[in-house]
Length: 97
Image (cartoon, rainbow, N blue to C red; front, side):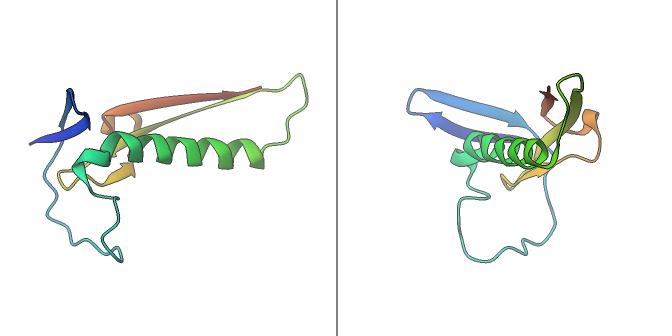
């Protein structure tokens, strides 16, 4: 399934994704599954994960950590962290030093 997301009046982002037959358990409408907000929602998920991980780490100057994860968009436009690195359309690697 191809999900169309208009991220700019002149730019249409096409995301190859699986259709989702699950039940949406979220409350309210919101933009969590608005196809036109997919890229914004991916950015928000990545930023939130990055901030939480960095805040929870207390590294000495000689230490660093690298964390990798994938973000997946389903056919409803919902953005989720994938179970494995190969399971998402967006792969993210964070390095905290």
